[in-house]
Amino acid sequence: MRLDRKIAIVTGAASGFGEGIARRYAAEGAKVVLADMNIAGAQKLAAELGPNTVAIGGDVSKGRDVEAIVACAHDTFGGLDIVVNNAGTTHRNKPVLDITEDEFDRVYAVNVKSIFWMTKYAVPVLRNQGRGGSIINIGSTAGIRPRPGLVWYNGTKGAVNIATLALAQELGRDNIRVNSICPVIGATGLVEDFMGMPDTPENRQKFLSTIPLGRMSTPADIANAAVWLAEDNSSFITGILLPVDGGRTA
Ligand SMILES: NC(=O)c1ccc[n+]([C@@H]2O[C@H](COP(=O)([O-])OP(=O)(O)OC[C@H]3O[C@@H](n4cnc5c(N)ncnc54)[C@H](O)[C@@H]3O)[C@@H](O)[C@H]2O)c1
Image 1: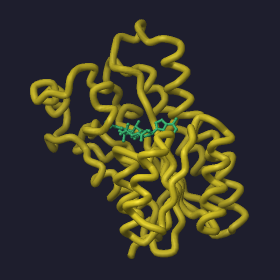
Image 2 (image 1 turned 45 degrees about the horizontal axis):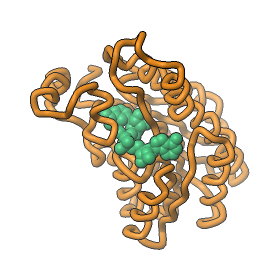
Image 3 (image 1 turned 60 degrees about the vertical axis):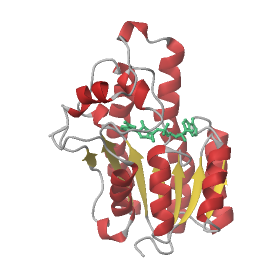
Image 4 (image 1 turned 90 degrees about the horizontal axis):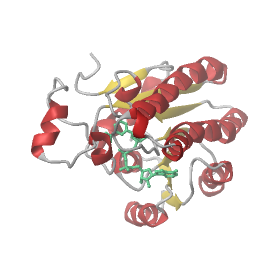
């Protein structure tokens, strides 16, 4: 199995892309911490996936919660090899002047500050183990080729992407690899907020027409990329922003 003996944290594992990544990681032999503010959802998934997974609640924008998530990996499975910073949110698609301060603060806290905290708590563990590691940030095509109506969400994903490049520069000497996966729109819990309209076939077409391969991304697409960036076959890959986008950013 491709992730045999690896220990992973997946944030936002209760639904959407995070759930897809967590399922694949478990199937590939990893031990997986399923972290989500939706603790019931994380527990349900852990019950289904079995004893190589553990669920933990918490808000990734809060330092104490992220510290507990990292400790959970150590206490339950004895170490840490892979961190997937996937939990994220958005303000609804709307004109930039209608976005409130609260919405701005929340989207930056969940999408960007979470990575600040995870870096602070996970990197010392990876360094102390001395066997490197793989940090995978879920960025977005929004941070490469932004759409209107999502200005500050786009800003957070630009920050995620550039932080990925900078972290790769700084952590390379510890053999800690840092990469971003940049999905195009997918039909997860966030899709109607991204669209700013009901997810009907007609409305979907407006988005599909901008994707050369003609479909949305799926959790399986994102999980395929996340397995590769976590496994030893990508051991010389760091500091990349990998679009999984059917050609949207080409
Ligand atoms: N769906 C898309 O179109 C799309 C496209 C590009 C990037 N992304 C990114 O993919 C990631 C996953 O989103 P998704 O589309 O699967 O959405 P989703 O809503 O289905 O899943 C997000 C998960 O994160 C959890 N979560 C949210 N805020 C949290 C917090 N503060 N602390 C802990 N857990 C939290 C939610 O409970 C949920 O389980 C996000 O970073 C998102 O920005 C999504």
